[in-house]
Image (cartoon, rainbow, N blue to C red):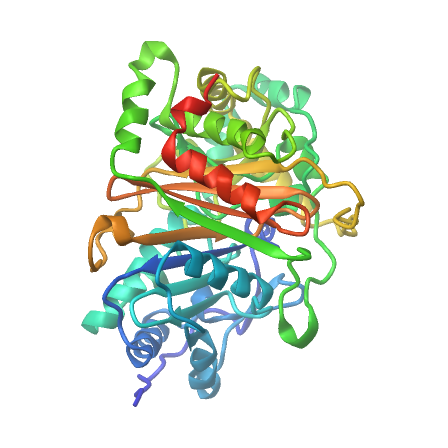
Length: 463
């Protein structure tokens, strides 16, 4: 039986606005499925959330969302037990491999909670996390998810999950990046990248990867697109279910063997080759789409850049501190061209300007545009690509069995009207591929073939 701890008075207001930089991501969720691992019981997970409430009563993890996902509402103490019961559920089915995991993610994408920032579904040896991107970007999911599982099991207090992080990170990044060189900002504004066909407010994903060995990457919107990405109309569906805008949510999860990433790193060569691991995997993904029989994607891809690199002091800024840029390399099938495009974005400071523009645009209401998903002709997929080379805290969880039996799915909600998000994560030396898409637009078998190609012969896909 769960025994709630005494909740100390919260310093946070009962209702507070969601920060503009977080609001950019209000329509994006990340679904994660992990296993097989030794798991705490549902009662232990509820207990750790009560302990979190005691040390951080205003934490966004324990709030509800309201006002078209523009406000956090703190749950009062008398209602906390009921709220936590809604947050912690039982996994609706067993998981015996990647296909079962894909099915459960698809089910979750159809039943996302409209008002909960976080929901945790526990099975016998697999756990599924349903997290709104409003909670934070990909720097957050690894420590938060792993810490909740670990502290639930050992009875500890999840202090990292309750930490709010430093303040004024974006103004400091702007000052450090453009304060001494106003011409740098002028060049960024004067040279915007081409508008992409995917709705930028939904092209984002939850987890940043690195450009080469340093730059963070995955999808969102460039400075031009961000200026057009304002608040959206209500996303609520029937019975409090979040409406993703996908007619038939699809998910494919796959895993490589242990030698694949070693071969990719060997093919990268030294710095003089101008190729990065992320560049190789992104180029292979772009080529795999056509190879699998899907329509040839536009010659570009959404890539997310971590803004923490621009803060002049070491920071682990909580919430969202990332910017999405639509890359248009000279050849999207060439790893060197993609790597060069990522380095150019990083060096220009464009991610900082994009974050500022996207946040400012949230002050101006803009009606959502029709997604076009009902079009008779299937569109070419607009790719949003993530590479996660390090999930150190998830890697330290008490895994069961062999590495070849592990399931790791990281599935963000893709953009409506033809978006396809592909997350490439490294765990115990293996590459884990998760693709999310609208199966009403793209054939599941073709997407499975694309993921299989990435997990078997990515180097063979390169130009």
